[in-house]
Length: 275
Image 1 (cartoon, rainbow, N blue to C red):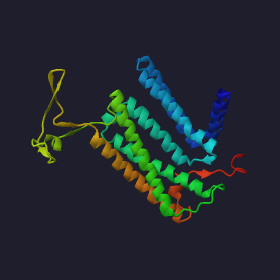
Image 2: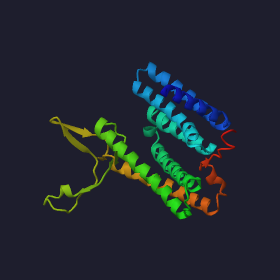
Image 3: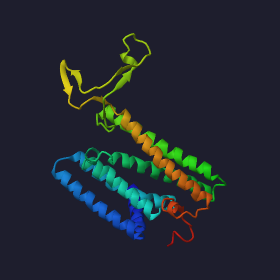
């Protein structure tokens, strides 16, 4: 029974994709690239990356499934960006090591993440505001604030997830930063609350298993804190940008062309479903 339901959902998703030529072209192209990558990773014996490819293929179908289940229409621009975002994060970022090859790859994706989730949060509130089952009349300012808070909440939850993965599986999802100055009250020789400062750090040595190991990194390793703060900051920027865009979209009664590219609309049951 569950297999029949899932098969119907996938068929409905495929039907929806056929109605959007640009989205379908991007989807099929990216899917082909993921499948080729998965085959290559399988023959290389890297089964963790094979799993990432399978996960990516599942994530590719989710936008169409959500469209059908929630009876909404995702703008082509939003859907294409979501597909590209998934591909950039999983295939290019993780498997092709773009996160380490290109220093600003992670920053760019986190900025885009803040923008997209602000759009999604704004869309959810907008749909509630317009849905016939609800009698809400929310101000543009309130909707912008909710969209911003929704995006920041998703960003914080993701950082929680990265920290959890690093602690349990030692994945280093929260990338380390090399710094040359540290200050900490734990280094106060008097055991008080005065921060002791160490400047001009050029090398760090750690003792593990009775053996001293010199870390050839040119300074002291900040274990993920600066990376987390940077991710949240750019998420903040992306969320703030779309919240402002969404505010003027509602303020001008939905006439903004740019905002409409990112805000789903509720399908009219009598017309859109049969189209």
